Length: 300
Image 1 (cartoon, rainbow, N blue to C red):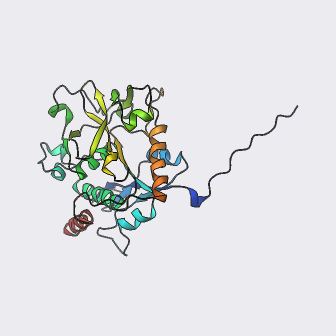
Image 2: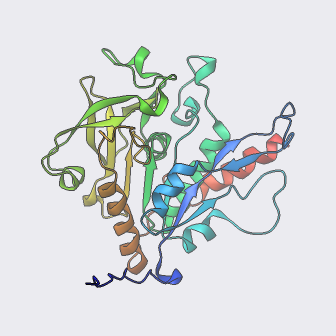
Image 3: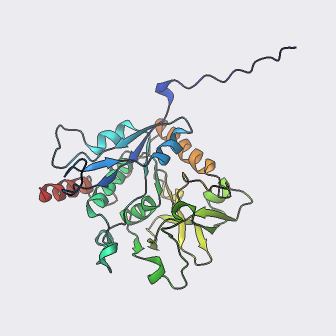
């Protein structure tokens, strides 16, 4: 007896798919590099693009529009108008000067140019009312953009801190986090108050940005691990995690990333119909974009 064939539902039309921006990582010009000698490289890490694509979204890297080779009139605002949301992904340390401090060690100096670029991306998407999701460095950058500060190094500055980054195990280094009851994150993960996540960072939130809530803390040392803009602010969706939801444990024993991804994409879908424009986190419209342009002009 032949079994009836089950048909897959039709794939969404290209025009119906969400278009999600992904912030660029930077590999700055290096005359000692054998390939692309003395050229600035901008790139995305494969797994985070695949994470977004797993839900059917189209992923677009948002390149820095200014620099030595810049031509044309394309700006970050054009990307923010065209795309449905943006993900700020991980990478280099945040420069302590971005939150008013001097680097305590040379190794923690971070990447000032990438900070200016990331701030300009956040500014552009916030002004257009498009959802923003941050991962690892993305969480830290969002916190700084809206007035928060960071620990330059958790282990040396946070009393009783455990190790949050292991260079040997890298994305297979894990710890537990406590989800704060009553938060949106708690709604996404009912009956899961303490969960396991990866941990690949040594900087973290010291002072939370005004208007944001902490949705998860590392256990037992209580470092903020997830934040979200308070919905009572009446502004658009901004959320972030210190862990990388796109990285998976080999044994699968970490928090399921699906609810986080679906929550962000649902916000992007809603913003298509009703964007909620805000203002520049730096208080003056497009100030971050101007600072980025000026910094890059001074370099060349």
